[in-house]
Image (cartoon, rainbow, N blue to C red):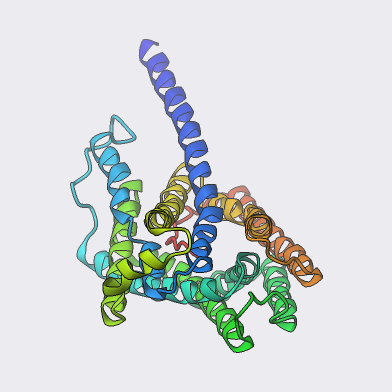
Amino acid sequence: MLEKEEEEKRKQKKRSMKRVLLLLNSVLLALGTSGGPLVMRLYFIHGGNRIWLSSFLETAAFPLILIPLTISHFHPTSHHSPKPNLVSIKLPLFLASAVIGILTGLDDYLYACGIARLPVSTSSLIQASHLAFTAIFAFLLVRHRFTVYSVNAVVLLTIAAVVLALRSGGDRPPGESTRQYVIGFVMILAAAALYGLVLPLMELVYKRSKQRVTYSLVMEIQLVMCFFATLFCTLGMLINNDFKVISREAKEYELGESKYYVVLVGSAIMWQFFFLGAIGVIFCSSSLFSGIIIAAFLPVTEVLGVIVYKENFEAEKGVALVLSLWGFVSYFYGEIKQDREKNKNGCPETELPQSLSPNA
């Protein structure tokens, strides 16, 4: 009897701790989702020009992942589970994570190219189309079947991107040519497409790996991915001589030299908030809930871009925003309904954690 009471108390304590962790990680994810693009745009608005440097900052703070990873190692979630190895990831999974990390680095570069040329309120709407690409690549790579809801989401998000493209240049920043604006639009769209490929690709890696997917393993995979993404961007910085001009750019920065470095550090931290928050939300809840938080903060990011940077908000953006939110709701409602049907049929499917890019 006493053993049952103690077991019940342990379960209650674990549930309470999980709720606290879910709340904390949700806040981190929300901050990273909106703060990352805004701080990155701040760098470009006031005289920053280094694309490779900006893409580097998206994953450069990856050592912060070592903090929860270390805690997870020394304080396993269950008292009955064996203590995890210092390094859980095996060579095949390490190599696959490294390749996806390089793709993530390329995605970071494409995203930074777009952010450098487009207002935040526009780039966030275009980036939302990643959900459509995810649905298509998930069907091709992991045979995730299309439903009425996912098809509806793909169509709505595609129309939203077309609506923005039809008014291309209507919110062009002062002093920027139409050609540069179009390049930015294409780069953000390419970043969304690549991110849409990375998610199902990582799910495929999880499915084919012969390791049990744990929170520690997910963080190790994310650490490897961020390391190789950062390495890819570091090589780009070396080739582009970014390291040589950082000090000069800092002196010429409109907000001042000290604030230049504050912006760079702030950008790296905000993106890492995104990573840590997303990993934590997936562990405490699901990748679906993580996606819902990201989708919910799409209008927040757009409104902040309009308020903070005085960006134009034309009717086309309003229409694109409504279509994007409608697409998100349709997609997630379909996923929730599908999960419930599987559970009713007695075939629960464990949801695999997905790879996490800052460009969600």
